[in-house]
Image (cartoon, rainbow, N blue to C red; front, side):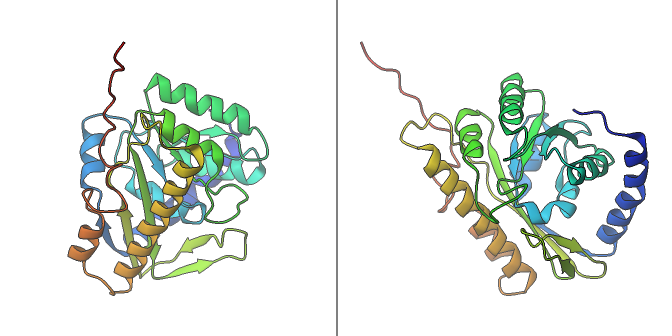
Length: 251
C-alpha cells in the first residue's frame, strides 16, 4: 500500500461521514449476499468485482475485517483521493491501472492472491474505460485464483450521474439503495475456458447483477424473484458456481 499524504487522509474523513449519512438516510435492500457473508464470517478470502461507476456505495457491503481487503486504484491524483477515502472504510489499496503501473499492479495482485491473506476487489472497466468492458488482466487473475469471485452491483433511485467516461454515480439521500451479489464463481481449473471467454463471462455476469438491481429498485421484480435469478443452480451462474473437478491424468 502506498503512503498517502496526511492532508489527503484528513480531507477524506468528512467525505466518508457524508457517505455514511447518505447511506443511513436511504432505505436499503441487500439481495444475494448470504453465501458471501458466510465466507467472510469464517475468515475466508474472496475476489470481488463491480463496475467503476458504482464505487461510492460498495464499501457498505464489505462485511469482512477492516484492512482485510485490497483494491486496485490508479496512479493519479484521483487515485490518491479515492485511496484516502477508502482507508476510512478499512479498505487498503494497490496502485496501478490499465495505463500506468498496470504490470506492477497485476503482479502484486497475483502475489497477494497466492499469499491468501486478503480479499481482493477490482473494477474491471477502470480507470479509463471503456465503460462496462472487462480488461484482459482481470480474466487472468480470475482463472488463476482459487478464490471464489463475487460479482456485485448497487442501484440508487436517487443519484447524480456525472458526465465522465463511466457516468460515475454519486448517491443522494432519501432514496432506495439496492445491492445485489452473484453466487461465488470458480473460474480456475477449467482448461477449456480461455482468458477472453473468462472476461466475457465476468462482463455478462456483472451486467446481469446490474439489471437485477435496477429491476428490483424499480419494483419490476420482487425480492423472491431476484433471489431466484441469483440462485447458484441457475444460468448464467451454473456450472461456474461449483468448483471445477480436476481429474488426474493416467499414465
